[in-house]
Length: 324
Image (cartoon, rainbow, N blue to C red; front, side, top):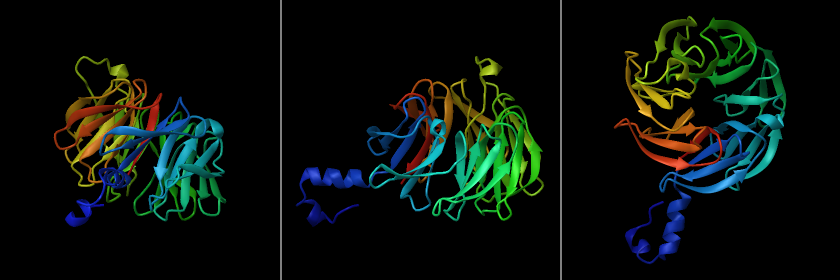
């Protein structure tokens, strides 16, 4: 909030500081080993709060109205809902065992949850808390995405090495796409024409045509001075303008920058140790990476393609979301 000049001149400096901080964008980071969330003020780039949550928090996602945060408390076998106005856990959802990643349907109600130990995707209504469906998928499901148009829910199974396509109208598994070993994350592009799927042990990212559900491009990565076994793709983030794809490359400690139109790898950015997942700020001028082993967040200037800062958080940061 920006006050008119004549009001600003009369406001105490402390009140101005509170007003500015109240409207700063905030990043929430799940710390897998600490059972906490770190809260980062993105104006000051400082941790302002640490919140205790369930055991082994991993996947986190925001409600569409930005009032609630959903948290996969994997070892508590539940999905917690946090009220962002108070930073308190207000309820828990029946998630199935070992929820790791999830995705919220555009209707802001139906949450698709990957249950790693049960080889299931559980669909929960976040308002009624009803379990709407449990869908059999491959062994060790992990990655989860819902298309922007709400038509598809997509899951990856780490041991079966498949991308599973679920019709959100019928909750039926209608197709499978075989990818490389240990698929971890899936991401739709803005117009839902393409799906990007990372394969951690295979060392590749598959670009899949959504209409045909066939792979149209497979990306590989070579980082000078890094053994190929350490190049393990996990998180993927795509810019809305279709210019860049960023791929977190795990224990190689690098993020790949890819021309999303030509599929050429433009650069490798050195970040913290064991980079897992990523998120943009609202205007996509910055990218934040969770670095598990080094326990920090790297801040990437998207325009300059440079790492500008590291922010210490808890132990083994895993997921990150940004509330504008």
